[in-house]
Length: 395
Image: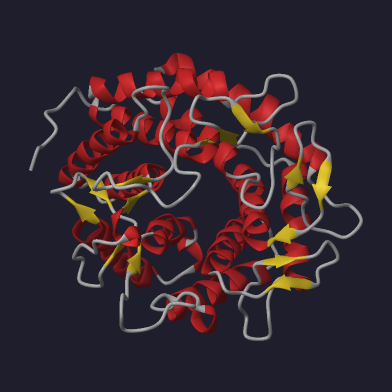
């Protein structure tokens, strides 16, 4: 597997990061452009807070973990200054989007803006001597926990009491966020939160009878036979599993590692398009018609996160099934998503694997999943497989 390590490292530093360094920085108004076409031209100047926070994190993380390059720190602080000045309302909630100059466009209805602001400022606090960055990360994280039971607050359009559902997205993100910014938080808070997150994912959202992690369940973890309750997002499953694999390694929990790898193998088999290849975006766990019209598209982040998951699973267990899936995913993603001519990766393919949109960034795609995945793969694939193949538990 080491043969792939240099490929992913070179892709990160020679093809992907240069694209964002060259095209995304708004020198006039601050922050980053994310709506970039294939060549890197800006086609819209709106700024989305979760993509701004993610890009701050990306360059801060590289500065902290790879090399103290001043250009990376400058890039991160460029975005941070914009967010500090314009990103929050008077209660400290992060807006969803701003116009180019920093005036609010969409209210802070989405807690994920807060999650990625905390992620970005937490990483930047390690790289910079500016103490305000750590305080922003802490206060934002505290606000996330306060809002966690009702993430949309006054903007929630669901009528209460009829079909109250828990959503998988927040515990999934917190499983990674709590580890990323633990240096700025109280250790006991992080330990307690991680324990609760593992419980939620493995005992509430994961259904052994179905073999997948559901996107929505009733608060007690029971199944909701509805559009919302039946939906499965294989990409979310696989991304969450590698987050939890990192937690299991930190806790030296071999049993959890084995359980997670079994789920990963079940999910990738379930989500793989047997006819055209690639992973479906959405599925219905009962095989009913899926309500998301984009259900059969093949998305960049789904495949990048699946690659990371299978690489980590193989590195930790030596199970050849994980290696085989990694190689199949590698062949598919490098053939269909990578843009050798202009840099970066395409984001959206149709079911047959043909490019639907030539954009490199937009409202949802920014400087995050591709470079983070390339970094994780470079690091993971550069390590020896730690153990010989073990029998994956089946209960």
